[in-house]
Length: 303
Image (tube, rainbow, N blue to C red):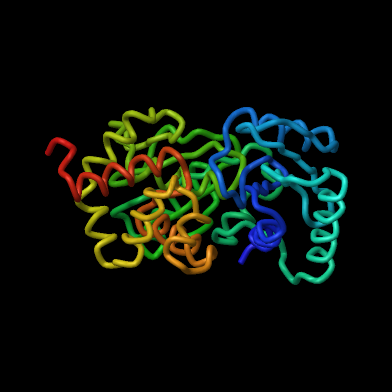
């Protein structure tokens, strides 16, 4: 379990509200809600200034507390609390200090360590996922000539490369590539795979940022049969996903309905992400999965 999950779980036990924990870039690592623009801006302000930020979010009192330990930096948003900001902040700080002192976590990202390491000391990294008919050694040699550094090979066959602020203009014959320019390794990892699987650029090189949401959803729905076949192997994931969408995409509500621990729900949602390359906790991906499941039950979408 990640450190932010530990912190989030403890805070949820503290009060009857929602909790958001982000890393130093403001990216959510634990969240019981979908973060909208105004909350994201408040988190950004707290991170940049180092000063806690108060606001009313969704008509509820909200406090954003910047976190700044040696090995743990980020922000915590507490939404809907009912007691004083001062007493709540003191309690939060004690939780953080206790975890920071006693945890053996290295606070790394929850993705292949090679990807994390590849982003270190690179000012503007470009992550590239390649699918190829070439032998692996030959592919790596060809990509190295283009300035790429090999990072990781997935069980499904895709290989990851990192480039230092270089856009790939061509590929070895028989290759397709998905590219992400996001500076965060966990986001780039997902985006590169999404671009590889669902991009359709005639050059074989698909950049995630160039794929419009409507096009991505359209392309994904074309592949719904394949996605449903993958999910069919895991009935408990499909059931969890349906109940998750029926309960406002809230892991907390889903856990209460299914009468299992919230962490079990999150683990199952993460497995859906790993199997389908769609993250149910992400709004756009969640819409796609919702439509696919709706189609499987009610045939709402055109064939």
